[in-house]
Amino acid sequence: MKKNLIYLLTLFVAISACSDDFTEQPAIGALSDAAVQNEAGVELLLVGAYSTLDGIRNNLSGNGFAASGDNWWFDVLADDAHKGSTDGDQADLFEMETYNWTTANPYVLGKWSSVFAGINRSNAVIALIATIEDADLTGKLAEARFLRGHFNFELQRIYGNVPYISEENYANTEFNQPNPGPIWDQIEADLQFAIDNLPASQAQSGRPTSWAAKAYLGKVHLQQSEWAAAFDLFEEVINDGPYSLNPEFVANWESAGENSSEAIFAIQFTADDGQSLNGNQGGVLNFPNPGPFGSCCGFYQPTQDLVNAFQTDASGLPLLDTFNDTDVANDYGLEDADAFTTHTGPLDPRLDYTVGRRGIDYNRYGTFPGHSWIRATFADISGPYLPAKNVYQSGDTDNQGAGAWGQQHAGINYHIIRFADVLLMGAEAAVETNDLASALTWVNLVRNRAKNMTYIQNEAGDADAANYVIEPYTSFADQAFARKAVRHERRLELSMEGHRLFDLYRWGNGVEVINEYITNESRTIANFGTKANAFEAKNEVLPIPLTAIDLSGGILEQNPGY
Image 1 (cartoon, rainbow, N blue to C red):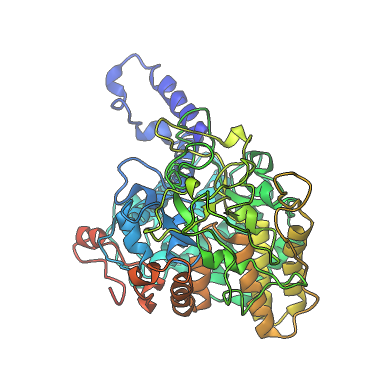
Image 2 (cartoon, one colour):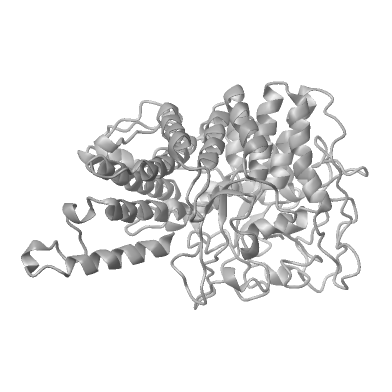
């Protein structure tokens, strides 16, 4: 998708070069209104809107890593991940991880800035289409409104009370709008227009379909706890849509599995043999340091709490209430040469495709030896684990993009929505409408994929690397049990994918869960509890950035509690 932007810019340069009178041409690097007031111009601006899905743009305000479209650092605010690396590296994110949030934190501004870039570029397309009368651009308009719906959804669920910038505001340069409350109605209107006007399939990967719009609108209803409306959309996508689970869980993060039957809407990242600008620049910090291939920078380390969640009982079912009673064996505080025995209890096999841990093969690079692959010291609050989903598998050269100081612009697509996510969102809506049969069916589709996939093997290649035990549920005894099972399953399937914090917000249990996490995590990382502040109710949305309020001249109002 991003390559199209280069091609289209070249096309416009060629067109503008045909005039005999240079005075009729716009300045170098700019296009006249007449040059873009056609279908090609709409496509040019539309590709520009797609290019902001990854959050990266010129003149970004705030912290550039905060703009990342994969929302990795929101897992750091929940119980799935630590910032990683040393405490002093990216100190602003350390403040976020330890719940010392201020309105001036550059991470708060960085995400705000990147999301509004996407909104403005989407509005640019919509406003331009409104001026063109001699072409049917309904499909392009639907794509632009889908994108605007996505960016506004991100804004809404992250910041709570937010301004709405319409295409009319954009055309009239009226960007200084108040933030009186939620903008759910506008988001829903955009996605409904996309449902009504997008095709059921697209020739080019990365463009949304009517099915993707239905899944996204279901997600929007779910985030508002509008269970019945969400259920109807998810049921249609699940039963009638063109999607299915990949046989292999790990295929979702391999080049061979990109844009497969499980992909519903994804950021299209592309790597090359250098520092591709189409790679995942926002996630550049999140590779082992030094790890197995000398990468940078050791960020985004999974928590002990997350690892514990993958424990099962002897029958292969999760320990829904007791997974944190005991810890999965870890080597925190040990050097590679120190004796260590890997955990022998039963575990969900998805663990070792999600988390790198000592004694287990890491993304086909060989056995993880221990602390020598971890940048953080034992005095830091980052722990002993490595992320796996965002790190390409050994030999997957199509997704590998490395630079001079070890940074990685990976080509692994980021799934904004994948089919397993839809199954579990559908199961959640089913539980809340008391359709336990549908919830059981959809959860078990996800669990059976995990049961039947290829398990990670030991170093000799002749047995499973750990005691993997997983089975589907035979029944859901009641709504309360089903609710607990579905919520836990979302964590197991979708951890380290940027969803966890927003799930906790929706369920309304963030204060309880995160404060309990701080306590439990301190059993492994003793100084985590002394460095982390308590998570408060106000933290269920980020503050409005102080810079934005100042630039608005006081039009924007701060969220309560900040």
